[in-house]
Length: 99
Image (cartoon, rainbow, N blue to C red; front, side, top):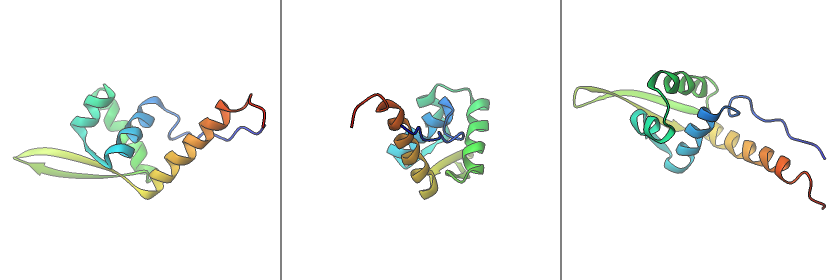
């Protein structure tokens, strides 16, 4: 049985949580991600930047009612990477099963 390599970008609890939210929501504002992941603002910001550098998400900064707003959107690359990550995890889950 060959175990598939796990994407190091997604193999982080917080980055995986961010991606899971974006898979279902398509896009999310920073405060929603903070609320859903229970992360600190600083840690969330660092992990969002890592996902952005990997081109898994796009980040748009804007103002709403004179307050800064950060919107994160999953990219096609991110969607594919998440799907591949899930398949890789499944290869571990099914390792002991007979074919």
